[in-house]
Length: 118
Image (cartoon, rainbow, N blue to C red; front, side, top):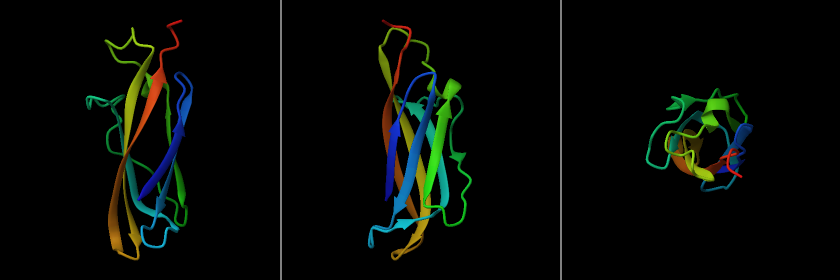
């Protein structure tokens, strides 16, 4: 199971804290693999951010996915909207009491505010 929290601000930086949890013991576990994809709600990949691997440090239970710059851009056709919805698709594998290399996947939705609309 993946637990993710995030707050987004356009033209700033966005950090999604990702923590895996053993579904049996509820204890935090370190990921074996962790990757993410950033899309709009129709599945269009933003800024070529598809299947981006996160470097894993052994024993590290929290990992942060950073988005900034063109990751937080508005696509053509979105300029008239006050805010646009994005999807951060997070996939991982981990070891737990249920076995090794168990898969985990979640989608974190967030909004990018259009700062040019008053």
